[in-house]
Picture (cartoon, rainbow, N blue to C red):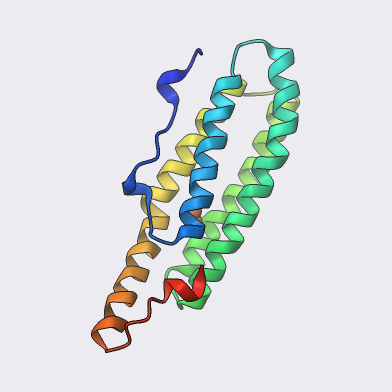
Length: 156
Ligand SMILES: [Fe+2]
Ligand SMILES: [Fe+2]
C-alpha cells in the first residue's frame, strides 16, 4: 500500500456526540481511506474505480450536508447561513474537480483523495466543531434550566 501514511484514524476529537453525525463522519473517513488504498498508480484501474466510488461519495456528501443543515435549523444555530454556504460551495467545487479528473485535466486518484481528505478534516475541525460546541452549550443550558432531556435525542 503506497500511501499508508495518508490514512486517517478516527479519534475522539472528531466526535460531536450525535451518533448519526459521528457515524456519517466515520463513513467519510472509511471512504477516503479506501480511496487511498486504490491509488496504485495504475491509471486505467484508478479511473475505473473512481467512476464507481465517486458517485457513492457525492451521494454520501449530499445526505450528510442535508442532515447537518436540518440539525442546525432545528437548534436555530446562528452560523447556519455561513455553514450552508461552505457546504454548497464544496459541492459546486467537487463537481468541477470530478469533471477535471474524468477529463484528465488535473488530478490523479491520489491527489484527488488528498484534496477530499484535507477539505473534510478542516471542515470537521473548524466549521462542524462550531455547531457541535453550540449544541453542547444548549444541552448544558437546558439541563441547568431543569430540563434534563438531551436535545440531541430529538435530532438524531
Ligand atoms: Fe460534517
Ligand atoms: Fe458541515
